[in-house]
Length: 143
Image 1 (cartoon, one colour):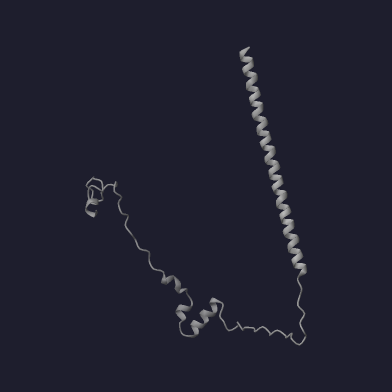
Image 2 (cartoon, helix red, strand yellow):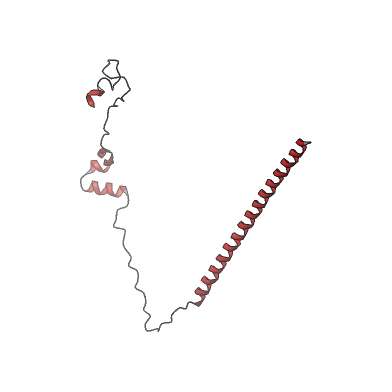
C-alpha cells in the first residue's frame, strides 16, 4: 500500500511540474504577443507624426523676378582620350617603339620569387647526417 501512495505522489508532482511549465509557456506567448502589439503601436504613432509633419510643410513662393534659369551643364569631350589597348599600340608604333607595341611589357617587370631553403625544426634529424637531432647537433650552434 505504501508503494501505491508513493506512485500517486510521484504522479501528482509530475502533473504539477507539467502544469507549471504550461503556465510559463502561456505567459511567454502572451508576453511576446503583447510586446509585438506595443511595437506596432509605436510604429503607427511614428508614422502618424511623420506624415503630419510632412503635410504641414510648405513650398515657399518666390517672386518671378527672383527666379533665375539654371546654368547649362558643361559637357566634356572624351573623344581625345585613348580607351583601348590598340590605341596605345598604335601610338607606340607611331613613336618608333614598334617592338614594345605588339607585346605586353608588364610580364617582364615581375621579379623572380625568392627561394628559401626549408629550415630544419628542433626535433628533425640533423642535415649533416650525424643521426642526432638538429637541436642536439647544429641547432646548438645557432642558439
